[in-house]
Length: 106
Image (cartoon, rainbow, N blue to C red; front, side):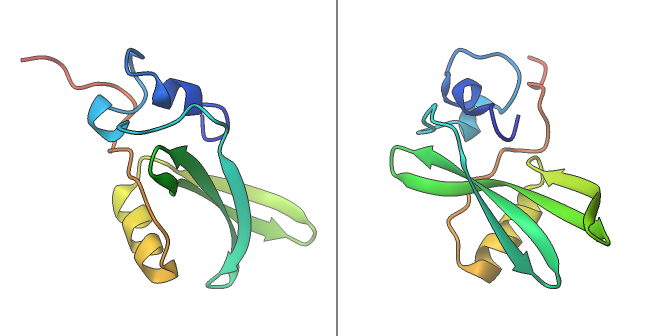
């Protein structure tokens, strides 16, 4: 989803995934990934294209054991983490809400 979900994100008729209110202006282009070291650990920032420019919508963290990746953690439905990281690194951020399913209609 972090790498190939951009087409679904940009599709206003797609069911599931990101709630429609968080999809506004998203383009179907594949995201750009940027690796950087932050606070002693490696991160990959997932930059998605929008009609008004790129924004980070996801982050992947890595735990290394020697020269191997021991654990990956993806943060896509973590708005507070994205907002804090964006403020700290002075990056544009777009949040995706807290869940991949749509809330039930009343």
